Length: 125
Image (tube, rainbow, N blue to C red; front, top):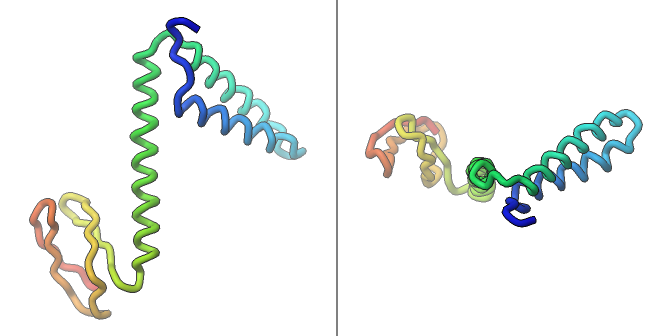
């Protein structure tokens, strides 16, 4: 294993996904998942045995950036649900920043100033 890349988060994810697909392939109508699971296990093994560390690190960094964005979106959804009675969330049309505002009265128009780009925009509640 000298000079090999080894296991990382992406390899472990591929292995776990292959295991889940392998278990699902025992269902009679889902036999085709066995082939997909085999390909994922092969890909995970090839990643671990690869000597091209820079390419594997690039793949890992892309995976981690996607994972971070998904976690961020899920956290925003959780916050919106938890604070749905007291706050509203708006997205700035200029810089796309999410802004949390204390929930105003229904049917009124409010002017919101983005803390990032300092642009003002109007929203109806």
